[in-house]
Length: 143
Image (cartoon, rainbow, N blue to C red):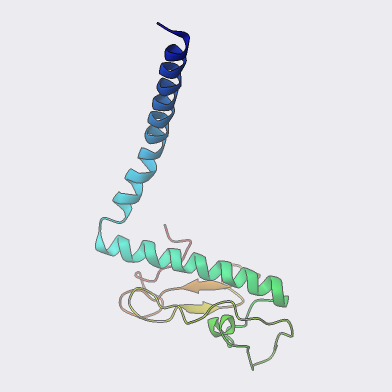
């Protein structure tokens, strides 16, 4: 067998092995993601949690720019429009373009300071029934 043909076969074999290893490594992640989105209720909860993570990231950026989180009275609207309720931040910039709604079409509830950790804001959904304080409320720490 010529040397160049042998090198070509080794190269292709390596590519095949590496590709197979990537597929084997990715399979559990793909499998879990498909399973978690398979039920309707689970789907709503997963997407709602993803939205809440996005809102928390936006709030972290707001705090970085302005020095504090929006108050409960200012709410999540402070990410869209400059607050008119004190404390009005001087370094304010718009962070989001529009209100975020949960999967049931309602705005997320917001509280700062938070009940569990007063140094952090709380963003949560009132769930399918829209009533605060019962089992279908969705918080990021509910797993």
